[in-house]
Image (cartoon, rainbow over all chains, first blue to last red; front, side):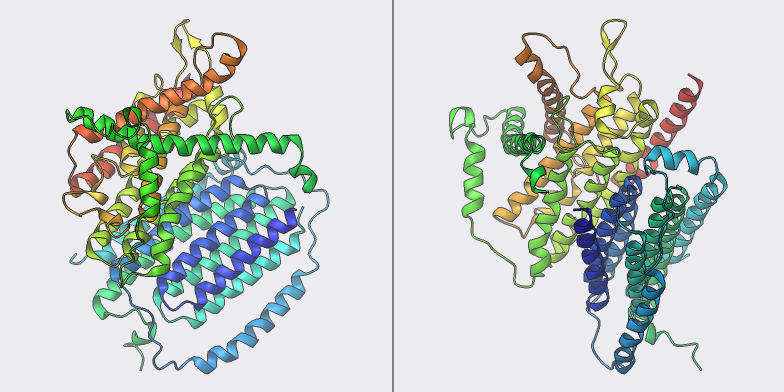
Length: 162
Length: 100
Length: 337
């Protein structure tokens, strides 16, 4: 039963990722990315990381992607033109190369096994908070500084006249 | 319990799709989206290792990856708006003024 | 898997799902009637009272009307997104009912991160409005969608931060535990509701909730005087009914969360024979949600709309600092006491 759910989420994730690449208009690509994010949140829930699954949806699908969609609608972008596509032969040659790379990576990862006696992990808010605010306090504070810098940078870059 | 290598292979496939998108696409916003696909694949791998080894550190690192992705998306989109204002196009092939 | 589907446990769960879903859909239909009657009484007129006694069959008539209307699609609309937008708006709105506890065991699922799940699902509801406005390919829906997405994104921040104080007191994210933590009374008569511990959090939550559901005084997305009908201008018939239902479902979700976190959920005095005691918690819960719905509708009937820049100023420069100060003070007090 759980394998069926994994296969479902994995198929949706890979399909959405391929759709991001295939679509001509960038708005459809963003919407496919939102589908990918919800599929990945489903996979997180299967791995008992339910807090991260919900945070993924709130932060990524609910805020970052809204920003993407907002910018695309504000700029009123047309579909990508299919004009002089100098890269067409390169793309056609790239797909077998990509498949070969995929084959090499999968061959390496096929025999990976986890440590057999792994303790059960509950990905609840308590477990993450207990570790985040004691062992990883410095990186936590530094990421808040990073967000402040990104905030100032975004405001300065998007201003019409400084 | 799903074996670890299934999650790792799925993460690898998604990461490679992101890399493929980054090389093929010419629209800047599509490039940013491919970077987001890569970051999500990395998140999946981290959480897979965290749940199969019983340690919480993988999930903590996913937090930091999420924060960095948010910051990068915000600044990247601000740059996209500035670039669109100057050039009226988002095609990276047209931004070749520094090419000799 | 087949033996789970025919087990007694699943059949009880299925019965609960049907009860909650059916009950909520009927309640949403009658909320439309409540709104029209209440607004009419405020405006000194009777409201719909012809169809059935006191107008009680009006939602049925409205539903039949929506079903039989002609499906009009604008020529230059983006057909896929145009049809998908009402669905994207309605599904998250109804999905939130799966984790809300209507009674001590009348709930569909008890997720350990239930509160965050509802916030995640409502933040996905923004896409219905944004895509509906964009797919209609016309200027009024576009403006309504832009305004609405910026507004909903801004007020989601203060909405989420205003409940952190309650979470610090209750130490749990699961909605059933939040309700159970408010059982009992202080001094024999004052119920242990979080509203007495977190009054500022309650007010910030109510204001953010009203802004989040696009209701007056924050409904610039569909301001009737300026934007014809905002993002759902080009929608008619069943698609409009889905947007309509999604808005009311969001209202009921925000009210349900407010009662669970601040007003004690299904806690209330229990009396009478055993069958009455089983039904009373759900009755108290629905009564408290009804109080919030009355508040929503009366505010809509009385208060004028704010301007867009006043709206943004209020969200970012007033509510957000107040919510942050609330978190600071609450964490200080929780650490000391």
